[in-house]
Length: 238
Ligand SMILES: [Zn+2]
Image (cartoon, rainbow, N blue to C red):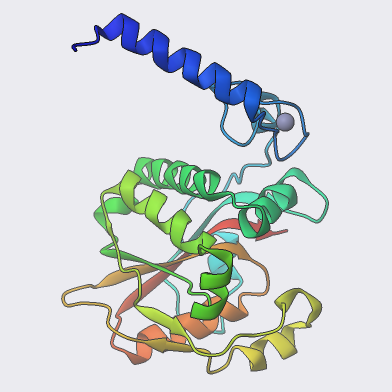
């Protein structure tokens, strides 16, 4: 039976309404019920998100945090991060509450912003910061990988999914100071393969705090022959 388009659309809307009624979704920031057209964040909260005003580049705060520690071509982040803010609620949702769609959508948004700045013309591939395979299996996903996929799709740039591998599962990084994090991550990342002919790759993570993880990842990538590396993060601790 051929179902005509308007009827098909109407049936789709009825199904969506029923899903919203049976399984109401809440905004991860304010807890209000979401409209069908809204993703995990309602429009009111979205309008108040603390978006970064910094463009991609060597003077972006992400890149500046790495000055004097490791060569970096440029940095970029989308959201300012502070404890107990909307960004922290979004990150918590990404890490612990299965925010798969949101991670991908925020990645797409990052990609759209980067595309306006011509980033897709200079970057050859995106490399997500890996989780330990056991941890990823337990959680079901790696937020950094989902964000990288969203960026890759917006930019039309490839994602090199398993270029880096994390060796050892570590205790939560949030309870350690910068020196402890540095030592903890010193030999954590192995490079499998970054492919041929890639001059400029960008590391992708969900949050950039001390830069210890990015520094270690970049060191591994340079030792594997990468010429130029940048760092892209969904959020940056201000
Ligand atoms: Zn909200």
